[in-house]
Amino acid sequence: MKHQIVTIDGPAGAGKTTISKLLAKKLRCIYVDTGALYRGVAYEIKSQKIDWENDVCLDAFLKSLDLNFIKGKDTLLLTSSKKDITPYIRTPEISMLASASSAKPQVRSALLNIQKNIAQNQDAVFEGRDMGTVVFPDAPFKFFLFADLSIRAKRRYEEMPEADIKKVQRDMEKRDTNDSQRKEAPLVAAPDAIKIDSSCLTIPEVVEKILIYIQKGRSE
Image (tube, rainbow, N blue to C red; front, side, top):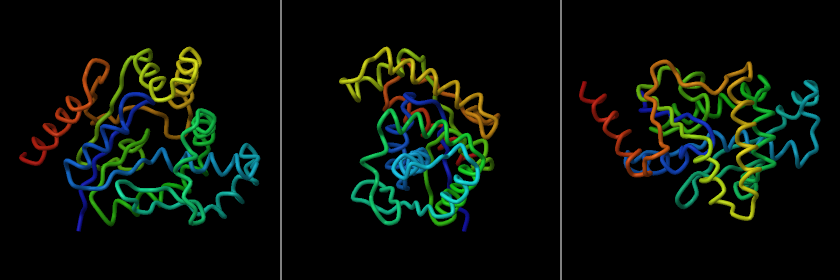
């Protein structure tokens, strides 16, 4: 049986996570934060002090890595060797390391099977940066969310007000550059993705726009 897959790509701060979670609830399917997988890799690289720029060290590390999603109360939890690491993967340091290490082809290859296995078993909304271009190029519904950099930085700052908003924006701009210019699976919109500028839209408005596109696609 073929399962329905919705992909939502875009840069940090565009609203992907909140929108994807709400959309999954509306569609009564699971939400998969694929960025969490890359953050999980980054977390273990930092925890185990892996020289990830050394291909031999990285290959050995990835072979021993045991990342998985398990069902929590309201969402999927990310585990590493059966330990829940979800609370530890959202720091700015892990975000930057995830962006850098995800440019490695070995990292993307190691995580590809996990994502595809989920899609084979159930309907899902996949949030990420290359879901519609690389992981699920044949997905029937693809969306690319974006917003002005200053607005995205303000949103991220509101999530962690103890941070320096200027540094938040600099880090975000640097990550945008890293993600869009990397050779392996760069952050770009799929040619057939619906692009949505969330700069001046509320979360419910974006979700409603996406639902209209999906409902229209189902009826055609």
